[in-house]
Length: 426
Image 1 (cartoon, helix red, strand yellow):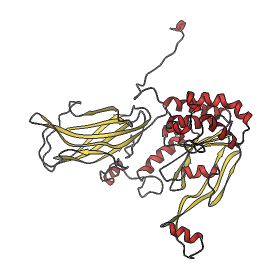
Image 2: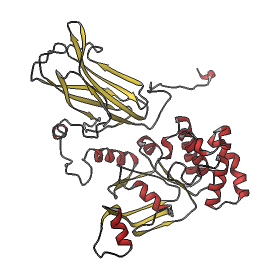
Image 3: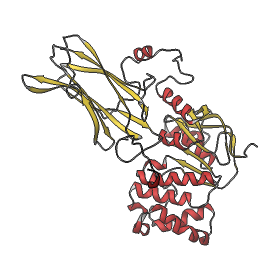
């Protein structure tokens, strides 16, 4: 028997009017011109999908794909330009960090404010207050104005309110990215409880590990259109292709070989190079470009945990250099160096680079890092007359996203094998 739809999105489009000057908007609103003074921008175009009762659905896509826009239309924050949304069930939405909170109110006062806005009586909020405060776990700060809260405390309280008011449909937009790993684990346990109770969850996240781990289906958006809907792993793989211009509708053909992909990329990173990257060195030899490739040989900065991936760096020598040292490091987003190596540590003898020579350095390894976002740095150094010389360094050159269906404690997974046996059976 087919499940009843909790959410139905039917041919929804959302168009914004973009004005070059504020005066154009004013002239049009006052009817002072018949000329169209704006450009049309469609954040969503003819979007269709259904979410069945009890499903956990993820929405992924690049920045500007329309993910947050569709959630705001579903929750009634925005009206569609065309199309219709039907919702069957009470919604609790966490679209933005603490959206709807009064910054001057205390945490307790905001709990009652949010509950009242959703339609609960004071008595009903009283009955849920202990559960909300226990989940948020922010101690005496509940009696302080929320303007004094850290971002982590903010999201803990906002999420605690959202999930403890007995919603039939929970909608979340990137709210979990601020909490620590233990709070996130608590939230996802609540997701599991909701699923068992037959409730519906719809959430947007850049955390592809969470998308893979918790979603029944995933919707992939690109430039305001639904590109595909399907199993989480298939959609994550498709999303990774989309990031490097090889997804549906791109100019790249599926028949392009790995070698051609590398060649077409022109040795310029196929994803955004960090604009805040630190670059220095005397440039007697320099790195012309770099790439990160997944286990399938596709250029992407999104890697599955436990899979093999490769980093390639193209180097040009402008004069003869003996025994160049090639290196990389991986840091977390706080700047802590997690791992890295170089040709000297690995005891690899490198041949001298002559003026005009071009080398390709390939680093291949297994991604046993925990799921999350990291920064990759590359280095080209050596010794001259016993002195250490930096020829070229690119610090924090690009991000590396590790997608994980299972995280352990710390920076990396030791892939431990655990056995639990009754003593009498040993």
